[in-house]
Image (cartoon, rainbow, N blue to C red):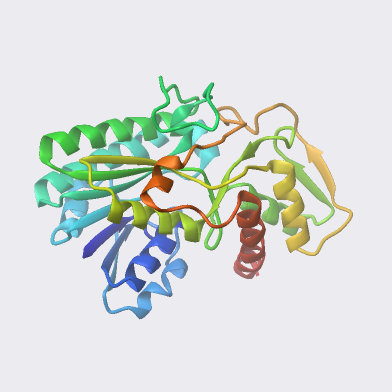
Amino acid sequence: MRILVTGGAGFVGSNLSERLLQEGHSVTVFDDLSAGSVKFLRACEEFERFRFVLGDLLEQAAIEDAMSGHEAVFHLAANSDIEQGRLQSDRDFRLGTIATFNVLDAMRVTGVRQLVFSSSSVIYGEPSVMPTPEAYGPLFPISLYGASKLACEGLISAFAHNYAIQSWIFRFANICGKHGTHGAIVDFIRKLHADPTRLEVLGDGRQAKPNLHVSECVGGMIYGWEHSHDQVNYFNLGCDGATSTDAIAAFVIEALGLSDVKIVHTGGARGWPGDVSQVRLDCAKLSTLGWVAKMTSDQAVARACRELATELLDQDD
């Protein structure tokens, strides 16, 4: 198929674009490079079926032009900078909700009828049921990012039913691995590169969430897209187990070959305002279709630390 990937030069998007190309699809990446990098697309550039378009999802004409002639859209573009999302209260609204509306409206105009969307487990807020299934409600997210993702899901459902757009929504666990640009692993590696004797850990270190390796994330998305056929399909996308922030710190320290690192906690049950400190996802719905992550959360984190220890330090050097 001819597929447009928004945010395709970013963390998950670049891994996804490479996998789609490997599976025989033609891929156009649409990205403004505010968070991603063309370096992440080097493997994609080896394929004749690949094209890169520098563009902004807030410019409707640009996205319509880039989308024309495609058969499906994988929409991964979003605000990945948590701190900026808090400092600029409209950031997630613009880069998440409005950008998603623009993608959907461009699909209406251009006649593209398949959308795969990267949502997040943060739409559940702080659920009373864990592991949390997709049917959980009511949904009250506690972050602006989570509110934006939930609003996007509502828009997707409305466009799906009004304009015959088939959609697949994936509510991600924490994602880690090659080309990572944010999150605890990236943060810890950069901090330890600056000072290998001391590591500041936000919160009390006991926050724990399932961490899915990016290779399995893109595999799960593609599998769900190919094997579910409702008008609006929606899945939790995660893995067995959950890894605490302190455990992530230990994996990073081991990957960097360090010892005698002093861990300093900032305190409190949350790493930052809006942080959901405990996440467990019920992924039985996708499992019933036939897909299950092969790596546990700890295994995914350990692999991601090894990958990023090399990748990030090479970039810094």
